[in-house]
Image (cartoon, rainbow, N blue to C red; front, side, top):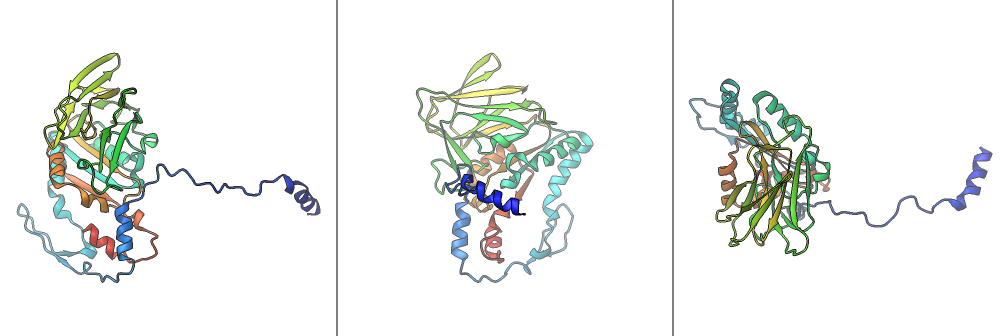
Length: 333
């Protein structure tokens, strides 16, 4: 004991005054949901009463099937899953058709966590290959285990987490991407399949982009040693461009003269079985989905055809000084 105390005094002069630095941490990839902050501020002094728990919900008869009334406290909602289960049954019995699921979430599903297993489970039983819809750029690209995703630094990104009035409407992923004017460095994005079950290839890569008056934009598609130029035609609310046919191991796309054209992402699926799109955003409370443009969402649904929408939110509304979440329930219903 005496030796230990003596050693402390001897070596104290060589020890740092502080173990951890006080410099500001790098918060480049830390995202805060602006709508959540506004909602918390608006309701900080509110004393909302619970008006939903005992509200009775009555369902209309569907295809001859009736459902007992429920309330929000014990809500199950099976009646809304009838068409979803019917399509799964069709897949299982006839191997015909396809099912698509949109999975919205926060950092819990960042990097395709959870959704990866969710997707694999469905595809193992009902078929289907591909990771689905992937953003143009993403802060979670380095941590994604189902796809290698790289992109140049000369992209401009607008997110529904912190932008209320985007230059062009947000896509179904809550983002819209624009190419910056750069006469020196190419503007590009690259995707590469990994050795993931049911996603070891990139089937039918298809670019999704929006409406613009720019008629000069084109895409330079690089697949291995082959290079193909394709012209963009941004005349509709949501447009698609097949970058290649069949399945690939990797693909790189360069964007040429694409100023003002809104880009959303690239979809990878083989057109059969089940496909799950992971729309995760760090720091998302779920409230920003209320800012979606209805016409744009309808246009995306016309292209992709969703049968089920999963909302996986809640973690980011915790720890704001109250156990009363009526304000959150009210805004999410």
